[in-house]
Image (cartoon, rainbow, N blue to C red):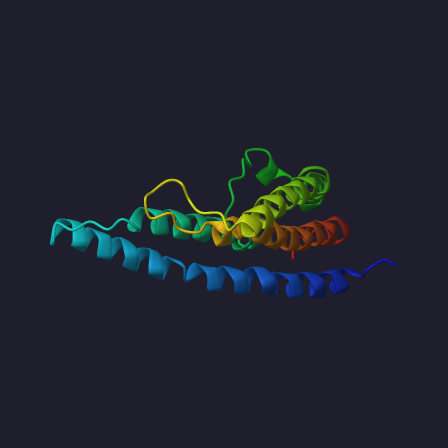
Length: 175
């Protein structure tokens, strides 16, 4: 069964809601990150009492913020692209290249990233893994869960972007 171009756009809009929603929700991770860093700076330089937890919390929050925003960034075309030639091509040629790259590189890469992330996260949850980087030894299994969640969000957004390429192939214009 083939989808009409309008049907493809309806599907992409639904998938894009996931990317938009997740980007806005996970964007709020910046708030505890900033609060933790401000607290550390004040504790260290005003009271001469540095914390033992700020580095670990900052590392995990920044890493999570960065990774979980990747699908949102893909939705808004924010990833690096070298478009010296690409920008001059007609929409159908761009779409053909994008569709091929999503099929042969992006989707297989995301599947491998998800499987590796799932394996690392599930093992970490089983053993209740803790960080060895500091004396505080915070649990890192929630942080490792970010990897498969990121892969899933990127995969969902990748489907939308692939379908947009199919739309552009059919119509000769980008949605």
